[in-house]
Image (cartoon, rainbow, N blue to C red; front, side, top):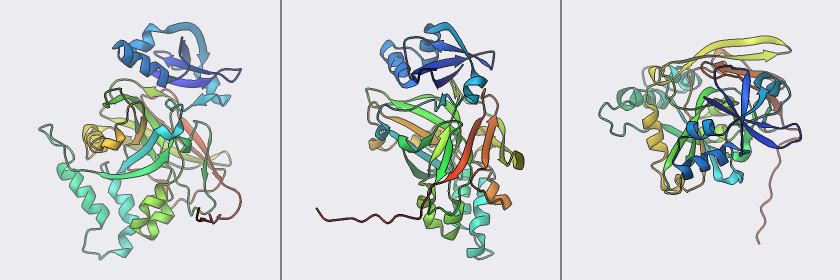
Length: 332
């Protein structure tokens, strides 16, 4: 089962479920958000899938029509955006270090390993412990709170001072912290992590700055386990024509870390276990258009699709108007 959040014609909110027919979505009755549905599932001791099945109504919507009308929302949010943490891990996929290394290689000695390659090798050697123990920790970065999330079909707006706005096709884990402070995975979604690779290329220590950008995920939340082998396509469309297109792989069969290891290292921090909070955590990618020399432009459309997700994720690149603003800090 896959869940969607969408606007009703009058501007209200609804939760929809997609099952066998990938266009037909049935409304989940009695709730307006997946956050609300998840809380009810916890209170009733049900899985999210079971709670959704019990509330399936007869009203149907055409999922593709919802996308065309711009009525789809990200499949998870929080009533207070400050209580949603958006974060991610990098160098987690087989081959993912190659693109990163290309950006930094010229600054390193030809016969030495860059920091990116060292961390990638650490993941290869210790990211999938066979005995269930916590493996080597991955690269980790902060992106923002829930206010940075662009809806499916919406704009990814890079700030006026940005040097680049580049796509990153990824799988996103979506979580709710329960009343006992334990993380509960609700499902998975397609994501565009969206970063400033030109800023990062200047110096690896600018990685944190390059990640402070908007992101998008959805529109579908896949319930249950993620397939071991996820295969998709990432493309950039400019002026109605495909500028760049490349397949991307995800799932543990194509990763140097297990998902459990990535989750364990994220949720080992007590400040990430506040009851009621939600988390969107990007698991990384090995496919970037910037590694192929593509320079994106405002108006470009990012298109990410992959089985088994019923709908693709599309977003348009925009640049915020005006020059870089200098914020004046005054003593109180």
